[in-house]
Image 1 (tube, rainbow, N blue to C red):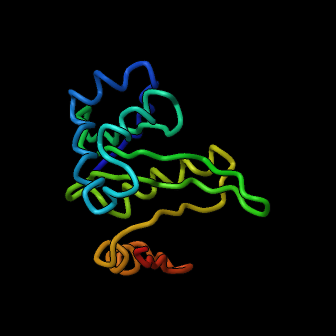
Image 2 (image 1 turned 60 degrees about the vertical axis):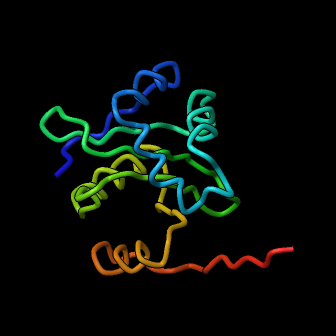
Length: 137
Protein backbone atom coordinates (compact mmCIF):
# COMPACT_ATOMS: atom_id res chain seq x y z
CA UNK A 1 0.00 0.00 0.00
CA UNK A 2 1.30 3.49 -0.80
CA UNK A 3 2.67 5.41 2.18
CA UNK A 4 3.80 8.67 0.55
CA UNK A 5 2.93 11.04 -2.30
CA UNK A 6 5.77 12.68 -4.21
CA UNK A 7 5.16 15.73 -6.41
CA UNK A 8 7.15 15.45 -9.62
CA UNK A 9 8.25 18.90 -10.81
CA UNK A 10 7.36 19.64 -14.42
CA UNK A 11 11.06 19.85 -15.32
CA UNK A 12 11.41 16.18 -14.34
CA UNK A 13 8.41 14.77 -16.22
CA UNK A 14 10.56 13.23 -18.97
CA UNK A 15 12.67 11.31 -16.44
CA UNK A 16 9.56 10.26 -14.50
CA UNK A 17 7.97 9.09 -17.75
CA UNK A 18 10.85 6.69 -18.30
CA UNK A 19 10.68 5.67 -14.60
CA UNK A 20 7.08 4.49 -14.92
CA UNK A 21 4.80 7.50 -15.31
CA UNK A 22 4.35 6.33 -18.91
CA UNK A 23 1.92 3.79 -17.42
CA UNK A 24 -0.58 6.64 -17.32
CA UNK A 25 -1.03 5.73 -21.00
CA UNK A 26 -3.21 2.89 -19.70
CA UNK A 27 -5.49 5.44 -18.04
CA UNK A 28 -5.68 7.40 -21.30
CA UNK A 29 -7.01 4.45 -23.30
CA UNK A 30 -10.66 4.92 -22.37
CA UNK A 31 -10.40 8.70 -22.82
CA UNK A 32 -8.25 8.67 -25.95
CA UNK A 33 -10.54 11.10 -27.75
CA UNK A 34 -9.88 13.62 -24.96
CA UNK A 35 -6.14 13.20 -24.46
CA UNK A 36 -3.48 10.89 -25.79
CA UNK A 37 -0.52 9.75 -23.70
CA UNK A 38 1.79 12.12 -25.61
CA UNK A 39 -0.57 15.03 -25.01
CA UNK A 40 -0.83 14.16 -21.32
CA UNK A 41 2.95 14.10 -21.02
CA UNK A 42 3.12 17.52 -22.73
CA UNK A 43 0.47 18.96 -20.38
CA UNK A 44 2.41 17.66 -17.37
CA UNK A 45 5.68 19.10 -18.70
CA UNK A 46 3.98 22.49 -19.24
CA UNK A 47 2.60 22.47 -15.69
CA UNK A 48 -1.01 22.36 -16.87
CA UNK A 49 -1.50 19.28 -14.67
CA UNK A 50 0.55 17.99 -11.74
CA UNK A 51 2.30 14.63 -11.82
CA UNK A 52 2.21 12.64 -8.60
CA UNK A 53 4.01 9.43 -7.71
CA UNK A 54 2.64 7.28 -4.92
CA UNK A 55 5.41 5.40 -3.14
CA UNK A 56 5.49 2.33 -0.95
CA UNK A 57 8.72 1.71 0.95
CA UNK A 58 10.59 4.02 -1.44
CA UNK A 59 9.27 2.33 -4.61
CA UNK A 60 6.91 4.13 -6.98
CA UNK A 61 3.78 1.98 -7.17
CA UNK A 62 1.28 4.40 -8.72
CA UNK A 63 1.07 7.57 -10.79
CA UNK A 64 -1.58 10.27 -11.08
CA UNK A 65 -2.17 13.41 -13.12
CA UNK A 66 -4.16 15.91 -11.06
CA UNK A 67 -5.12 19.57 -10.97
CA UNK A 68 -6.46 21.84 -8.26
CA UNK A 69 -9.53 23.64 -9.58
CA UNK A 70 -11.15 26.64 -7.97
CA UNK A 71 -14.80 26.62 -8.96
CA UNK A 72 -17.13 29.45 -7.88
CA UNK A 73 -18.39 27.61 -4.79
CA UNK A 74 -15.86 24.85 -4.17
CA UNK A 75 -12.15 24.03 -4.48
CA UNK A 76 -11.45 20.52 -5.74
CA UNK A 77 -8.56 18.19 -6.48
CA UNK A 78 -9.46 16.75 -9.86
CA UNK A 79 -7.88 13.39 -10.72
CA UNK A 80 -7.56 13.26 -14.51
CA UNK A 81 -5.59 10.05 -14.83
CA UNK A 82 -4.44 7.46 -12.35
CA UNK A 83 -2.44 4.27 -12.81
CA UNK A 84 -2.43 2.30 -9.60
CA UNK A 85 -2.90 -1.42 -10.11
CA UNK A 86 -3.66 -2.88 -6.74
CA UNK A 87 -3.02 0.51 -5.13
CA UNK A 88 -6.44 2.13 -5.42
CA UNK A 89 -6.97 1.35 -1.78
CA UNK A 90 -8.49 3.46 0.96
CA UNK A 91 -4.90 4.09 2.14
CA UNK A 92 -3.92 5.51 -1.26
CA UNK A 93 -6.96 7.75 -1.29
CA UNK A 94 -6.23 8.83 2.28
CA UNK A 95 -2.94 10.21 0.92
CA UNK A 96 -4.82 12.00 -1.88
CA UNK A 97 -7.30 13.38 0.68
CA UNK A 98 -4.40 14.73 2.78
CA UNK A 99 -2.92 16.34 -0.34
CA UNK A 100 -6.28 17.85 -1.27
CA UNK A 101 -6.72 19.31 2.22
CA UNK A 102 -3.20 20.78 2.13
CA UNK A 103 -4.16 22.52 -1.14
CA UNK A 104 -7.30 23.98 0.45
CA UNK A 105 -9.64 21.57 -1.32
CA UNK A 106 -12.75 20.17 0.27
CA UNK A 107 -13.36 17.38 -2.24
CA UNK A 108 -11.75 15.08 -4.81
CA UNK A 109 -13.38 14.52 -8.17
CA UNK A 110 -12.57 12.52 -11.27
CA UNK A 111 -14.27 11.15 -14.35
CA UNK A 112 -14.00 7.40 -14.65
CA UNK A 113 -15.43 4.37 -16.37
CA UNK A 114 -18.51 2.59 -15.06
CA UNK A 115 -16.33 -0.20 -13.64
CA UNK A 116 -14.11 2.23 -11.72
CA UNK A 117 -17.17 4.18 -10.53
CA UNK A 118 -18.58 1.02 -8.94
CA UNK A 119 -15.21 0.30 -7.32
CA UNK A 120 -14.99 3.84 -5.89
CA UNK A 121 -18.56 3.63 -4.62
CA UNK A 122 -17.88 0.32 -2.87
CA UNK A 123 -14.35 0.90 -1.55
CA UNK A 124 -14.24 4.66 -1.03
CA UNK A 125 -17.87 5.65 -0.41
CA UNK A 126 -17.68 7.91 -3.48
CA UNK A 127 -20.97 9.30 -4.72
CA UNK A 128 -22.01 10.00 -8.27
CA UNK A 129 -22.62 13.64 -9.05
CA UNK A 130 -23.67 13.21 -12.66
CA UNK A 131 -22.92 11.06 -15.67
CA UNK A 132 -21.43 12.47 -18.84
CA UNK A 133 -23.11 11.27 -22.02
CA UNK A 134 -22.05 11.92 -25.61
CA UNK A 135 -23.84 12.06 -28.95
CA UNK A 136 -21.67 11.79 -32.04
CA UNK A 137 -22.29 14.37 -34.78
